[in-house]
Length: 107
Image (cartoon, rainbow, N blue to C red; front, top):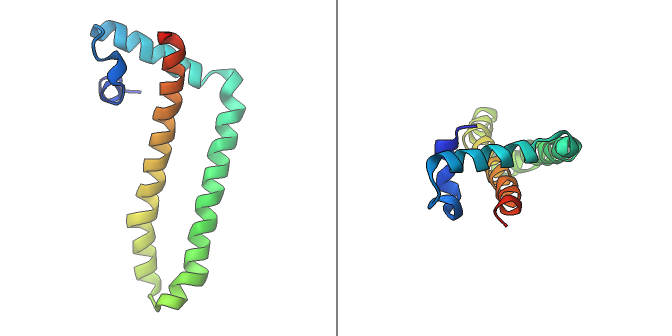
């Protein structure tokens, strides 16, 4: 976790001193990834990976033949579009989890 990069996603703590921002983010991070939340995080990651896999398989087995794409083109499309979209969604989920935890500590 890089607190300097994460601070830009949380304008509610921008007015605080840098040391306090880091402390709050560390506290929120530890809360989100505590042992109590481990199974919930695993389940969420597993479900999102399964959905992504199903969508990619559906693309390869159904859409690719309908669109008349070659295997190389479809693989390139999946690598350039599907994988970054998956990473972006995971990052947004992570930031949302941190925001929820951070709100507990700010109130």
